[in-house]
Length: 611
Image (cartoon, rainbow, N blue to C red; front, side, top):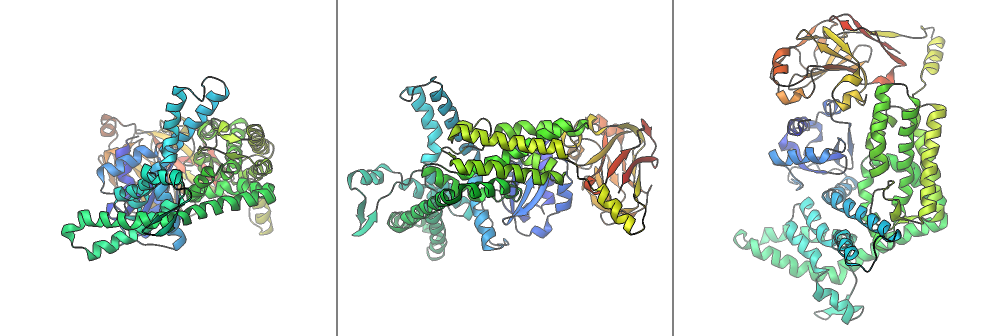
């Protein structure tokens, strides 16, 4: 994949550079804050090859891409004038809840890689200590431990930088405010003066701010408000030094006197509240977390729990990630069940490709979007299996002592280890067994037949899809693109065209015409959503050798010309012209029948859709 062209097209489809207030990324998705979300072409983005899904949640326009999201984000920030700083002047703010989640996720997203890497390093060190490979007193262990602990210990500094960036203030002043809470002159007060000191005669309750989260949010939020006020009242010629100086003089003392202790009390209160719930009904709390976690991830709101998780870890351990782990392994179990049960090579390939990321890194979005949401029959499996495992984890009081995404590799970061691992195994096995016994495909046929019989209609209805091209027919599994070959985009076949003309396969409306002309989407009068993607990675040609003769919204009849393209020029440019013809809403149909042709002429029967 050419990430530069891919990134350019995403920017265009979210409304252009001027419509992007800010953009950050997490493990699998780009998180845009758009000036006007209505300008984004959500439907086209969802059908774009390389995009798994588009989610609007928490005030963000989220484009789910997968594990290569960081490469796409890098290209976006390199050639476009966008970043993590919010253009607040014209930005649509949305609800208070949406703004809060947006600030939290936007502040943690830049740190996610470092936090996850450090967390896994702590897991590795735990394993090395447990197995006797390293001694806790050895220089090797202490040096590696410093690398693993640094981002957590100095978290107020990093949070000062990222929160300030997110809110449009000077990030380095924000980082300095966080650093002041860890500076030796201040930390030595705790050692030498006890629990209380003073500032200009005002009592200061001394606290340890290392690894804290909530004090940083409160302090930097106050700093942002102060900075905006100071810039209004101070002449611009002296703002460069006077605004930072006054900000530090006011916010740092205010933080240690009031804001910091208040933040610590909030963090402790949240941790104690969760501990109370777990103590009173660990089974119920775990069942709710394990059963619901997939849907929290689905909406992208899981990032909003990051401050709570980190605060819990700083206070001795977090049970939330432990409970959520049951859902993650339930999803992996569904993927494994589909892998074992299906005879479809493309589905088996896709299910297999999602197993390792889910099991080894805890990243399950490909399973959620590619398998579970496409086969909604499996949704109860992950709820039940996740709830069972979560209840067990809640019962034994399992928690994580290091921030690491739940996976096979991170099991040593959780305690008690054996009951926790057993709960994950039960979740995994439960969802796998349910998938094998009850199946994964939606069983719509009986309901459809009963409804139609009652209405006096034919039991089944068929829609004929003709070939949009003349050429050699291939299976999707032969396409040199994992998104199409895996079936993640939908069901269909591919054609190696011999004539550079594409015609409409149905009567319907043109719903998508990509600006580059290489892909067209049509919705038939019967409701079939069909994508014709001419060539692989041909978006990189930026419209060369393609001439569209229709536009979005046009009505077409079966056989009408859609686009002309130059096969030889495209091949000379180094791109295959293999063309997937995809039904992107396969869940609507009982079956999609391939007519099993080796070669096909345009307008000849290609697929039959059974409703």
